[in-house]
Length: 131
Image (cartoon, rainbow, N blue to C red):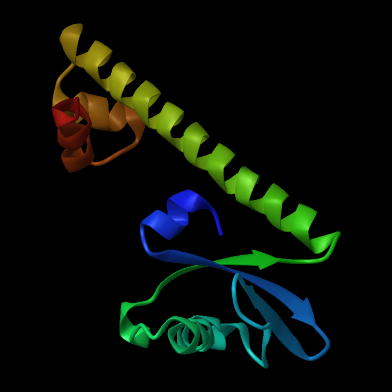
């Protein structure tokens, strides 16, 4: 657990797949074995509460899920692909707004912009209203 997390009352829990379940590694306590990852938060809070005499409802945790290779790399690549797609979507949306504004500035009506861009008139209004 890092000092920053500890200062905020946050406990870092490392979950790793093992056998037919998951092992939770929690600083300052023994490992906890659970069958389903969905049980991690409750099990970790309970174990930390026992070790610290803090009510489990007041225990803040961050679960870091660690997968074996090649799954960890594949997960990382998938997350990166999603982030890249979001950036591309944002870039495309900016370009679309710029085209709509340029058309409007050149005297093209909203209805005509809708036809040119193959979108609804309402969408044209949204694009032109966005800053």
